[in-house]
Image (tube, rainbow, N blue to C red; front, top):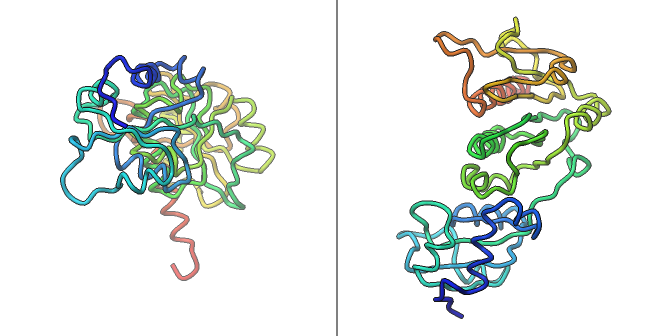
Length: 268
């Protein structure tokens, strides 16, 4: 089957899924890019539909083949003009899929006895959320909890900026109150990042069960999280700006925790 009409109903549906209300209503999301799609499939996600345009495939060994994807879900070939209409990023590589939206809950997390978690409060920018997911994946984080977000996990730009790690990292959305209750019930310490803290983040003990909590660049963490913090830490700032990009701050804190845990491994 080849779709060549820009007025095809499937084409129109894909375009509508760029809108959050449509994604929420249909409970669907878009994943564009061969690498992102490959990671989604490796993580066990299964597409509702995959659209391909071989004319746009990148040269060299592909991370995917049409035959492999077709064994996991329906694949439809489209013309270049059609793909350029449904694509949501510049320089498309000819791969775009529709997946069921993510709907994990706190109860779905199984972090183990000494978890390292990232809590991101009130994330506004999809790019920042995606970057935090990439850092969480690289640092071996046991789960990411997105609290009271202004953007949704199923935003196509979250998928894009996360490079598909949205599927490889256990990530959930939850409210602040229920997240705090969940952490307390599991005796997971809250480590709040704030520029006003007296303690340098490298001096904090991050070996145990901890949840690193970061807020927005403009407002920081809300009073609820600051009041609940078992320890507050800061990242030293030598310049005139008093805060880092939230995704950069999260990466520093997670890698410090990973370093400390690695140093305490038997034989380390």
